[in-house]
Length: 127
Image (cartoon, rainbow, N blue to C red):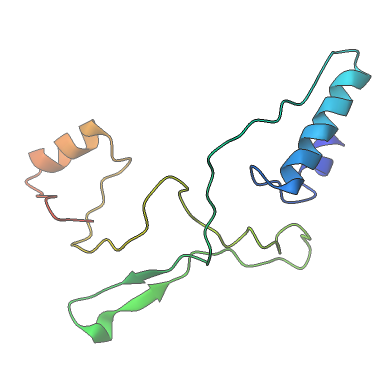
């Protein structure tokens, strides 16, 4: 029951849906006899103004192609068609372009880069 309600609508941090979910959790906690409150805090969050774009650029323009970043809406899932579903973004990262050879670095941990170096793979200037 609780999971069904919480997944019934979008609740991105700082939105009305987020507050609705917080109020729901508070009311559930209180119904179990637990003291609960909502503290409104100021958080510095940003949201994208437009859906992000990613283009895989090949050696020639003919090899370049856009990469899909959104998930398709599912008719059977009313929560999948929300304005928030196509906003794949990192709120604290700067906007801009990253261009370079593509190198897969697993999780991007120091040990992953050590492995790449051991294999003789130069990541300088790579994306």
